Image (cartoon, rainbow, N blue to C red):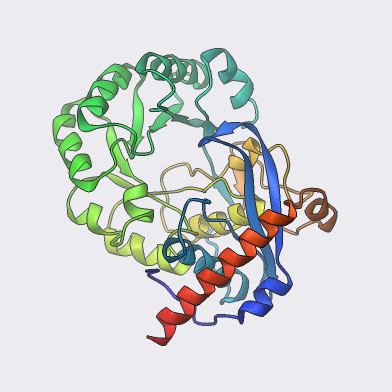
Length: 337
């Protein structure tokens, strides 16, 4: 059940009347996909995005709709800064491809490396991380993201193998909170921090990982947590350092993440909000691409020609519209209960 229902929930007809569903190609396979779909709609505050991953069912995806409504219809969000530093994101590519991918992230001092792909080996991960370390040099930062793909034993073995590359942290190395806690205990001497992502954004209780002492920092995303205000409440209650990240959003969704990052006091870590560089197309002529290692904190103006050019096929248009209706029903029922 979504944790947040927006104060103002527009009628579903209003949302659907202005909805545009796009299918954007990726430059490199990422999370097993080569096309990212998203539904965009313009609210009184500007363009906003609804793009839960396709495998998420309505009770979980409804929280993403709450975030979309909050950004498009809710009160303005106060930004403390004009730009946010971002990391480069490196998919599970071979080491020879690393320089070409990272060249799309000019000025980024931090690289997040995807690991634990089940089609690859630990040796592949080590080679990719080594190439990333060579690219950023000894002063750069390298973090890895396993998306919960390792068991505790596998994660321990991997972090031992990767420790020579001076990791900043390992993001969601294991799937569950108890596993994260056990891994953190086993690897305390390595100096590699443990970060929680899925254990926050896909949890019934996003604070459980903090209460269990299972992570050193949290990775937060605006859409899965129900919007900027809801995410800020999680950060305040958790009392841990955070990294703001994206969910492979269009530049519209990245704008939500940038506003979340800009609302946080004392944000220390580079954010995972440079992922427009992984898209081969976008919905705006001014995408939120990294420049000098940062992206701007601003609303994004959508280009209608690009919406038409990248419109999803009719059957996908219907699928997303039906999905929005189902998520709206969940939010309406929650509000009325």
